Image 1 (tube, rainbow, N blue to C red):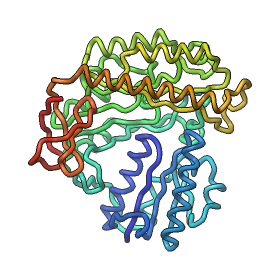
Image 2 (cartoon, rainbow, N blue to C red):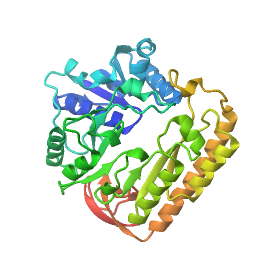
Image 3 (cartoon, rainbow, N blue to C red):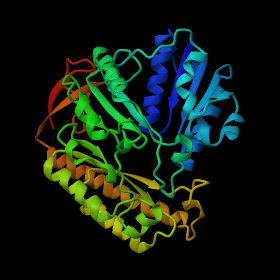
Length: 388
């Protein structure tokens, strides 16, 4: 059987898709472009209205180019709007998040989760999902509804997967979760993300990254244990807006965390997310955000124009910001992000960093997540030293 997996959204979705592909490939299925596939799995996201739209457009395009394909939709949009997704052309089945990892056994006899060698599915690093679900009640977010409560994997299972991944040849593992910082709270006995990091980083053959961590959960003790590359969503720098968002920290607390990382690891990449145009955001609120970002130690910022999610508290708030204002504010923050990135690259120019080659070996990603050309005569998945 020939298959294609199309993935939208976060690293957790990427990890889920990787698990699905691993099972399909382990059962003898062949990965091909979507226009030639017998089975097309679309793993959707629903964090914004544009994410929903992107999934719809993709499903319609696949159905048009490959009318004989069996399209299976899953992920957060498929979970939130099952009937809406099921009505799209070509969709044969809609599978909610909790059932997505069982999709392969419906189509491939002998589907198994044995990791394949790096590069066979276009990936050089392995994405390791250790937790899913979220119980934070951010007023703008629909994900607790689509992913359910926090559920952590037991450490012994995680360590077994790490052993299999390393044995398969992977040299970099990205640890991810929907609410990664809550790892272990639901286990018995309870555990913590710090406990997990300490256990997995004892495996010296591989570099571990951590994906997005909420500021209130950030364990300072992991800073020197993992790759110097962190992502801490800010969302806003106005404490008034943070309260409306129901984010459980202040800009002062956030500042203390990222300043501490920069002081301890000067070469670390520190990314963030911000939401522009949240209901009630005034010019003064926005200026607080822009001013903080411009002077911050952050190295890049993902800018998200606010998107109403039906069913969330924020969707019912008054004082919506005009679309034209949101667009202009978003562009200004993207310009700031470009300056932050340029400043970071200038600061580390001349330094030598370890980097892992990807693709055909002509490109490498440094430990602090800078994409650079690799010297000639290297293949994929090799550690090299590069001078920036």
